[in-house]
Length: 594
Image (cartoon, rainbow, N blue to C red; front, side, top):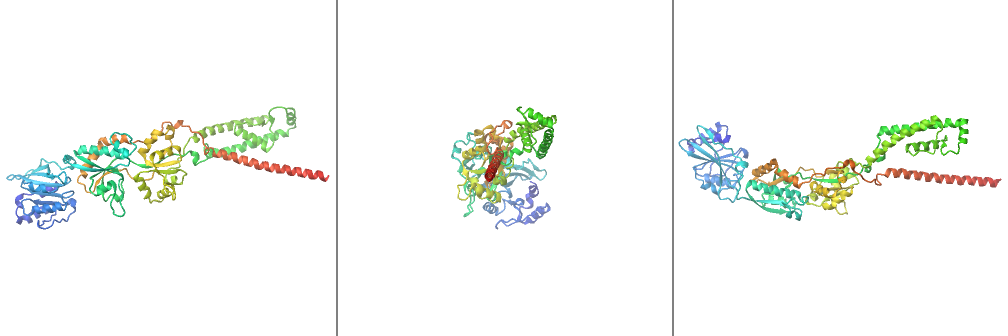
């Protein structure tokens, strides 16, 4: 209105054509650059549209021609502004389309003697409207300036669109959705479509308008041959629809043909999988102790061995001790002999808490043995307690797409339109490799599947399924055991912000639609339906009480040690047999020589 304040002049100063220089001078003195044009020529403007004001007097000849040109050049819209001096006859204004977002200010002289002017804004609800509507803006006179001032606000002054019918295009990917658009049933099927259907319903109530729904099966993608979009975006591009009723993601190629006006719902598609057991990436039998404890154990075992070996050696050097051994040879526990393997077997019995068939007999030997068993008992108890917890733990090593690519986890993708598009068009090396190696390997059927099949395979483990997280978690909540929910992990494949509601490019209703959607978001209406339709990630209620049977993979290291021991013992057995045969052969040859 500050521009208006400098432009409205005493009509006496320029009612005749010879005073146009006076008008020019008055505007320039107020730092308003201007260009006075001949109404018989085409309209031209030299300033940016947001700074352009067209100022005409309906009492002058040729003004109707100017309005005709403005209507043909589509200048009755944002951001152009028009100030029209009128004598009160509005019949000529009915022939032109002043868009809902236009700024057409008509100035009418109410009291010619006191120079009181009435300022109002004209607009039409739609292009087919025969009548225009008015917004009273202000009054002005030469003494007081502006009074009864009401600033023009589209979202406040032009929200009653009674009689307006808007075409709204929706995306529905599942035929079941048509049956449950408003009853909050089967919310895991097309949750975004169902939420946006309700949002559009509330928006129409705010605008006091009606709608004609258009249903598509895809959001729409550019045809490489025609540069035209299909689906919902194609409806907006071809003016078949005014609003894209189902929110969609931001992509660079869509910005030229549609406009995004407001966020809709926290819709994200991710890989969901159960974290593999810790034994999948580590040898769990080395994890109970940290490095320093292992080093201490490796130092303690040789120390115990050396001490006991020295004591046993000393025992058998005493003649009295040997005599006692011979006298008590019938005892169940025989004395420990001073051999390397004898002491080693006794120490292994202490480490594994299994005991030994022989032990030292001297007081020094018994004291050393007792403390050896006590020390290894604490280590054994600590190790056993930790290994139980570790066997129930899951790995945290799979955090990125690269980790997922290099893992032995199989991948699958929900068979839905946008997933096919984003996976096939991925050009980043890691994402491209995931698609080519794990989703659609050459010569194999692509791993696109239904949600039911994908979630079922996730439950079995070692499988990651790319799905809209709300739909996936809805099914997971209905099918998974409580303990199975605690190991759920997510990895993002499509790096996009949450989807927004869109309208056609240059829509006259952009401002009021945007404000209406923002109001629902701020007032909590949208959040209420979001919470009813969208499912959050299940909360782990029994993380500390999970129980799972140990599998082959968990016991792999134990079986490896056992197998190695068996193989080593068989090799020794073979060598012993060969050695005995050779010794017998030598004895036979020696007897024959005698």
